[in-house]
Amino acid sequence: MAYSAERSQSRKVKLARARAVATAREMAETVLPRYKVDASGGLVPDVRAAAAIIYDPDTNEILWEENAQTQRSIASITKVMTATVFLENDPDLTQPVTIARSDVYQASTTHLHANDKVTTDDLLHLLLIASDNAAARALARISPQGSEGFIRRMNDKASELGLETTHYADPSGLLSENVSSAYDMARLITHASQDERISSIMRTNEYTVYSGGKRPITFRSTNHLLRGGDVDVRAGKTGFISKAARPNPNPWPGNGASTVRAGCRLPANRSGGRCRVRSSSEARCSRRSARKVRHDSTPRIGTNG
Image 1: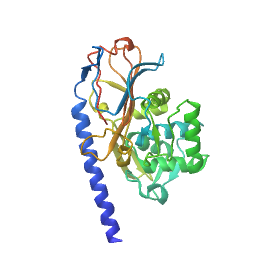
Image 2: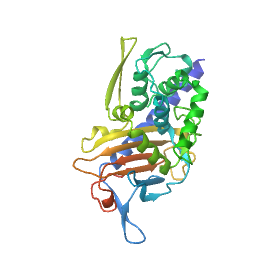
Image 3: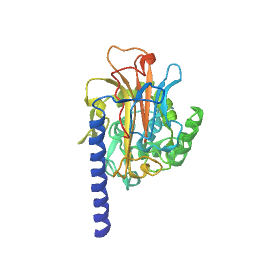
Image 4: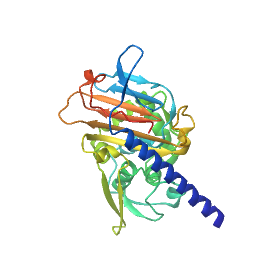
């Protein structure tokens, strides 16, 4: 048991270090927009992501893309569909939930303990702000479909939305079998951001829930764009999983992991719509002049994470 505990702790430390490296790179690379000249002489985004897309959700027009149809692991972007499916039957968000041991077992990233008592609304905040894996499992478990039926419903919902490269294997994104493409994720985040119950949580930078009304659990958003102040983020989701890098032909050198982000943002004093997705994997929607997308000097195009 001691050896197992030590190995588990060592794995957590390694994952934490990998996340820190990925976060540092992400923040460094998203400070300024980067562009390059393509073969035709046009100015296009210069990204290190293995796949990317700029998509107008109002017209369904792809304004720019790179490997946008390639299927790859999506890690915690999975949780966008988890929230979408859980909310589709208008559940009681004040419903009390007791966290089961199975929810937290090898959950990797969670603020919850077995026997914690929270509400479904608390779980949604943990899911979409802190990317809490135990919260994802708990929501699936208490859904009308049950854990296994919930995953089937996630896949059915993907089919209904026409997400042809998307498949879900668990509600948290821990399994690398959760796959999609940048194009599908652009469409999913566009759909999810229209639900204020989801987008309002995704716009929240910090939140506190109380287990049993007593133990405070405070967490901050994993989306660093919320902390910048130069864009009004409409919605966003990030994620991290070491196995998600395996299907990625161009992971960061020396980084045996993959980070992901999905979101919508609204720069001040802009109109029109645009959705960006970067992958391994990332999705982002922006409210901007879609027709200026190739020459706009202000958009931030981030990197492989």
